[in-house]
Length: 173
Picture 1 (tube, one colour):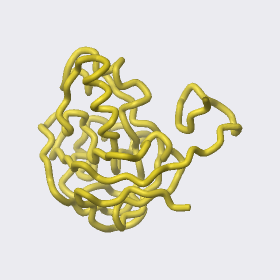
Picture 2: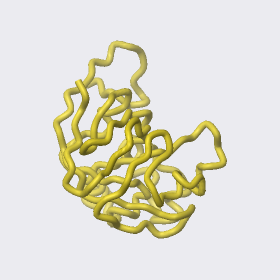
Picture 3: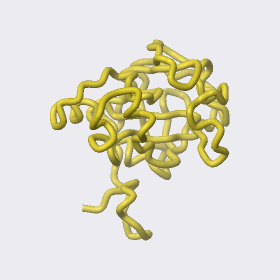
Picture 4: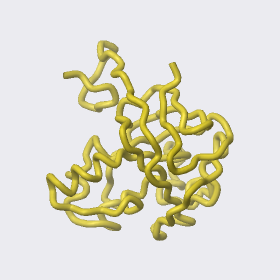
């Protein structure tokens, strides 16, 4: 099976997978690199910048010094966090993934290269947000291998607005 957004697949032959609308399950922010993630009910998204109060909007994230990396918004599927616990016996709380938005019911990998909305905020899926040794150092051994190609999505924010728990996540057709 061909998977859009799977780095092991190359070429233009991969058909776009349908994306079933999902929902925002939780939202997390951290003021600076390595700081604990804080749960919020809603957050303001600023086009081209990030989420107000988050380390990457403030250019204070772990990857901020690298001009090739832009983390305006990161998402992870709650189903992948569940899978990590079931398959690898690694239990992470939603914010421990270091992703801003945890979703339920939507395949975030299928959002690579697509415009989508979270509530009224328009976004563009840029690339998979692969796990790294920094994430593993802040969590547990095994996270790196357990989340390869399943750790979420980096997205650009294209319009200002608010993201709230319960908001729909849907693809722009």
